[in-house]
Length: 320
Ligand SMILES: NC(=O)c1ccc[n+]([C@@H]2O[C@H](COP(=O)([O-])OP(=O)(O)OC[C@H]3O[C@@H](n4cnc5c(N)ncnc54)[C@H](O)[C@@H]3O)[C@@H](O)[C@H]2O)c1
Image 1 (cartoon, helix red, strand yellow):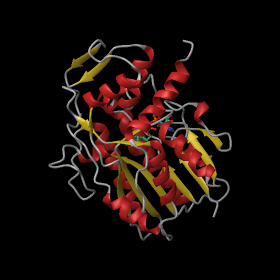
Image 2: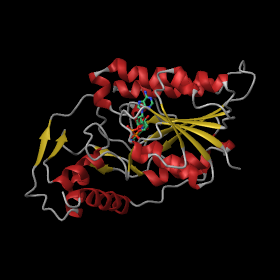
Image 3: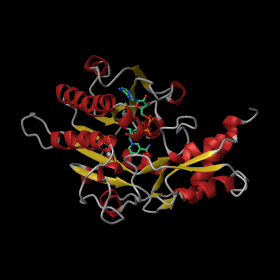
């Protein structure tokens, strides 16, 4: 049945793609976004847009009028590096912002919240692939605030004093990539950073030896998981890894990217710099829980998904 759903951060990369998927499935969507990194052009014209800040309860209040069925809390400070540069800003957006969303949900009796958590919650895992019940010991300030937000959401789902049941779900997303991820913001996803560099003919900077690896999951698969979980009681009270289950090294990613642009890696300006604080060495998701309980599985093959972002980037830089 069509629902009225609030998507926080719906002008950003992940939020806007999920909002599109919800609208495609016939839902009514209200987007709240401060546009600090999100862009107006990403906002689906069928959505109601409120320019607002989740750090300000008054702004969140503007999203309510008619009954709201669910909140997808995706707005956040999405950068590990920025979290070290300005920990208070990261804390305010990711933790206080989440508490404000919870307070609004309680006030307006919203029975469903889904939260954008992160693989950074795991810190340095003892082994990979990581399962949801592995220890959570974030090593980046960003990982601490995303995990704190996750715990606030999940703990609210256990509260019996609310007078109604709030069903909560959190997705620990791995490296999400796809169209609309910023090609110019050096703090965002590494796939888009490298594709932006290659599209503009700029040098590529690798932090560390490049042998660190990540689990890249395409935005279409992420949007499918979120949209499918809203009505799925199997996801209530649960935390899920969202990854592809496959690991690719940063050096491997650079090689595939340059090859797709028809550039010779041996002649290309690729430089190595010291590893940055909070960088995890190897990450890979065990996605068996999501497969079993959400009946979800990633469909997009990495090389195909990457090519799609490259096609998009080439289109954007055409004629420049
Ligand atoms: N990209 C990934 O691989 C990844 C992985 C795990 C978790 N996440 C989480 O997913 C969410 C979305 O990330 P993204 O990659 O789409 O980044 P993004 O920067 O494109 O999206 C974040 C959105 O939140 C908005 N926002 C930021 N602060 C706000 C505030 N105070 N009030 C209202 N809106 C605000 C931004 O304008 C932007 O539109 C973030 O919470 C991030 O922590 C991302």
